[in-house]
Length: 372
Image (cartoon, rainbow, N blue to C red; front, side):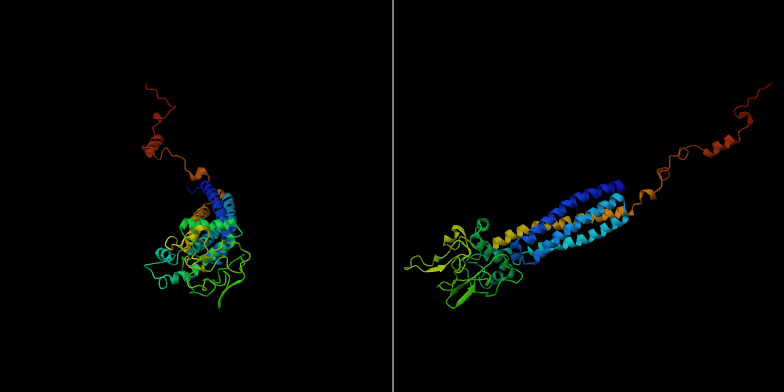
């Protein structure tokens, strides 16, 4: 098993599988570092992790060549360097894979997230039980992704379709819970999440209240009406660069003249916003988190699992280092002792030799005695 020829075959097989591993890590690292939605949802450190994954794949490719070269030449120095570099790569890959997997762990349990995305979260209390979830920085990251999608949907049909797909998959409408807009957090979005390549300008003003559009405040509510839980009319005033679907609905259809209060849903698209029954649709804050986590978690698990290849390469390199070189071994004639027929023969060798040496002269061959 551990002959030099077999070890070389093992190194060739490892190089083939590790080349697939490095290609996957490079592609996933590039995608993670360039996809803005991951930066918005999970923070800017995801971009750094993606860059490090791509760099580590290049480093791993060089180390893969180093190990293959060392195995072909039986160069113990190259094999030792290969084992050391693979040890470093093993721990780095575990850390990067775990860092990606860790961001997909929900901060709140599934029941809380699902119930708090409804207009009536009973038996949970909308303020005491759901406020912490809705106010959390993690939720604000996914809210930023939704706002970016909505903003771009008026200019790019791909973003429009993304929101439609999320709403269909989760049977939901808009981001937040229907009729659930509350001025509970006037703060801006977390500093480590930002609207890269998206520009939001202008303000919306109702009475004495004034907010910058989209990126200034996490919560924009239509306070100019008698129902303060309505979301502001969309597109927001001053949003001159987006042509997103309008949503400015009548509060009471029986009232004359009709009073428009904004939108019952948080930046919805398609016809779901026309449904006035609040118990039919939930907010998509729960669904978009599940979808984005599902995009990240499997790849991070694959990265963690592929780290076993580094362990196998280290073991193979160490085994090869312990093998003597071809010119430093005994010839086959000496290392493999020939078969000795007398050693295993069931005869008395000493007695036979004694009889042969001390045979009487008349019994020795070539001498013939003639009796008178």
